[in-house]
Image (cartoon, rainbow, N blue to C red; front, side, top):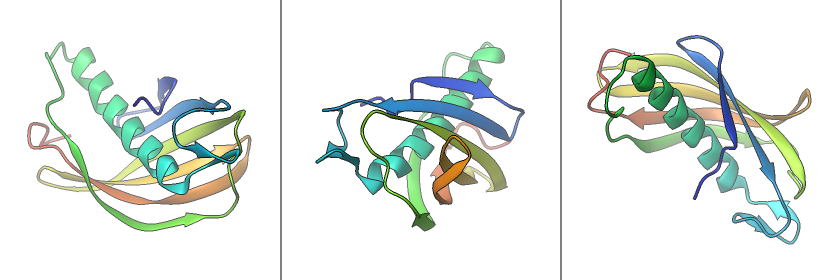
Length: 127
C-alpha cells in the first residue's frame, strides 16, 4: 500500500510529502481516514526521505527499515475522504541505527495530527 503521492525534500533532516485520499481508498471508512493510516503516512514519508537520499548518493537501496514505535501521536481533527494532506517530517535525533522523527499532518495550515515515531534502519547508521 502506498500512502504518499509525492515527496519534496526540504533539507537533510526535514521533508514534505503529500497524499490525497479519495473515496474508497484503503484506510478510509465511512468517509473518514483511519488515524493509524495517518501514522503510516508519516512512516512512508520517512522511507521516501531515505530512499531519496540513497538515490542522490547513487546507492542501490536505502536498506531495510521499519517503524518500531509510535510515541505521543495526537489526533486533533478527522481527515475526510477527498482531502489532500501535507505530511511534514523532521528528524529530531538518532542513536545508531535508530532515528527519531516528528511527524505532522496538515490540511492547508491546519494541524490535523502530530507525534513522534522511531525508525530502525541498520544500513543507514550515520544519517
